[in-house]
Amino acid sequence: DSGYGKKSYLDYIQSINNGLTNSHYKVSGITKNSQDFFNLLIKKTFETKKNNGRMFFFGNGASASFSNHMALDWIKNAKVLSYTLSDSTFLTALANDYSYEECFLEFLKMNFPTKNDIIITTSSSGNSSNIVKVLEYCRVHQITTLALSGLDENNLSNQISEFSKNFYSWNQLDPSID
Image 1 (cartoon, rainbow, N blue to C red):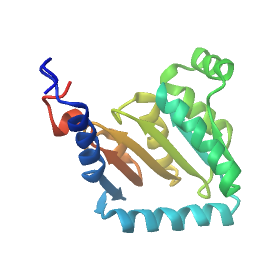
Image 2 (image 1 turned 90 degrees about the vertical axis):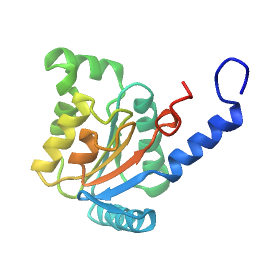
Image 3 (image 1 turned 180 degrees about the horizontal axis):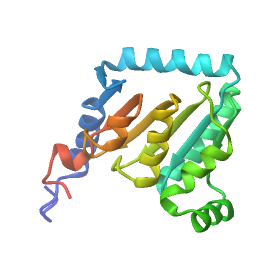
């Protein structure tokens, strides 16, 4: 203990490690072990590349930064066309013309997504309305989705997405850390 009622740095790091270790992987709502999950996801990404599919990444705040980075990595390293809505002018114009809750979905629809594409969302809560709207649209149109989320395992993103990876947050595992 640091003397301030908080856990030590090493306890904090261990809690994060436990969170990553105790993460949940699901495909079509069925819990999978990490190896099966990643094998299925890798197979799907190979199909996407083979069929000239694209990847779209969506997130808010820090998750938007992560989305930008992942889109660049997929274009540069895997040679899969990848997009994200990160341009502030485009984002605010869509939010103004539709709403912030609809801006990601409208961006996606403007790009005419197909069953060959993969949509990746990142949301700490998994319940951000603009993220959930994208996942709901993709589910109806049978477009593959991967939701990365934290906090509650039963969040909307995990319930809707075809592939979902839930990272438990450190304070769920050890509520004494705040």
